[in-house]
Length: 297
Image (cartoon, rainbow, N blue to C red; front, side, top):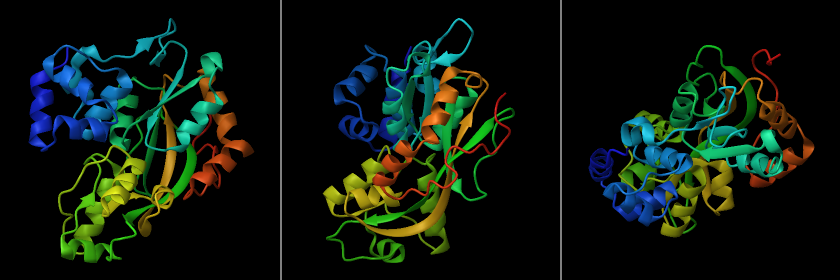
């Protein structure tokens, strides 16, 4: 059962309204109201997004009420047979579309920060997770994890066209409200590191659930956001790079040997996926789909 008291207390602690939490997590306000009233438990994908925005553990908020179903052979999944991957890379939606209707090899892509995705991987709740961070600065993979290179991208500040500021230092000095991410997000940690080097800290701002949402909010509000180059470009923002990140897919025990693993590898290595991902902007897809560890047998 959902711990509705802890759920509401965490929302209030972060200064979020029910509508604000719903918008940041990409769910309806009615769902947030129902969760706090104890009359509804969110589906797994919604629960992961809500927990990511609240920077809280899924189990702490929802207990055993949010679980993944298991196939007869013990593999985890949102629905029996599907290959489930969590992460914040928009290109995952392209792969999901490519594998739609592929039976056991179908892909379910869930939006989640790196920390949330890796926690779900360690718990056996997903087959794979996307991790991104500075080159050489990714978290330590759990034992037995197999790693595949996905892409490289730039993380930085996106500034709305009407904003006269053009550097992070100016944003900090002027106290400009920056659309940010959850504290567990790799992009948010990038912002914290860059601000610390300049001897400052970002002013409190809206917390977005993903790179694209952050860029969209900055464009709508005429302010700045911590986001990726691709998301900034899509929303017409001036982009200031802060860090170059490597993006990897980590596969846990539940995903190894699953038919979705081979299908995903074929999609990522294909010319069609790479063309579509490049159109999103900001991706360096060199070596996309290459194994960084020994591939599963």
